[in-house]
Image (cartoon, rainbow, N blue to C red; front, side):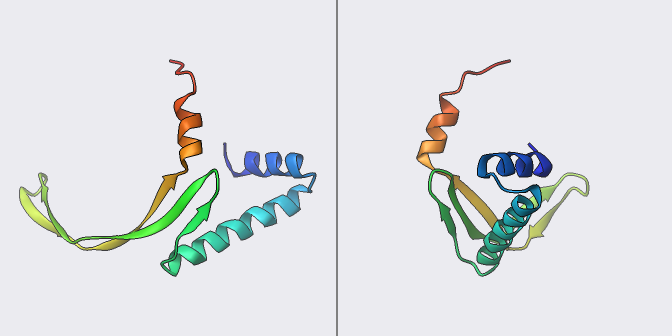
Length: 96
């Protein structure tokens, strides 16, 4: 599903215009981004928790240069799905 399809689905489900649904989606993403930039987590029931984590500085091997490199520490975004969502996805039939 892409953004356009999500906006279409939201407008159908909420009885809202597509313009209103697009603005609502943009504001939701903006609020999530602001919270994560501030280093705070966001928990959404039945979906999961978005949080930030700082990775440690580490050495890695670069085979192209046949040398070790130092990867600096950085802040990353993590998502932990809610147990309800994990169960629903796990119980889906696997189609190949």
